[in-house]
Amino acid sequence: MFIKIVTLYFVFFFSTFAHELGHIVMAKIFYNVKNSRIEIGKGKNILKLKKIIVNALPVYGHAYWELEDFDSYKKSSKLRKIMPSLGGPLVSLLIALGFILISGNNYGDFYNQIIKYFIMYNSICFISTVLPIKYINYSSDGMRILNTIKSTEDNVN
Image (cartoon, rainbow, N blue to C red):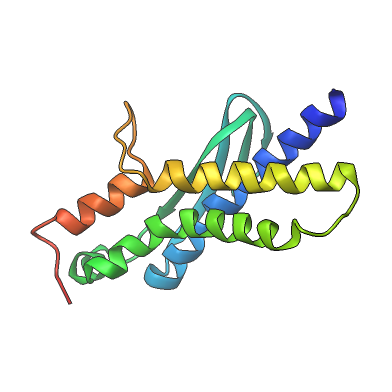
């Protein structure tokens, strides 16, 4: 049981970190952002580095960054504006698909179980983040994408 809990924690942490890193990579590619950092989980702080904060329960994450040129962002196309929001779900989808591709092989019970955890968690993460949902303190990636698409003040290129 202890090994299963540690394994799930690793899968949740790695997958959440990769998802949030997907947001930051897209923001850096499309907007050359600075001062980016990732916060994973909620609860008691267990690790605090300059760019990464890890809390006890890795149930969600958040990517933060600063735009260097807000005017450039405002003038950019809607497609370009949605790319940072799309980065996280794309990474989750790619992780799920990657593990689906290797799931047909027999690596032994323990590793096959880890593969299943990665497939399940990242599939759920992909679906739950692309759905347009408004939470109490934040919006899902899908909601941010939908709001950008529906916005009338943005440039359409």
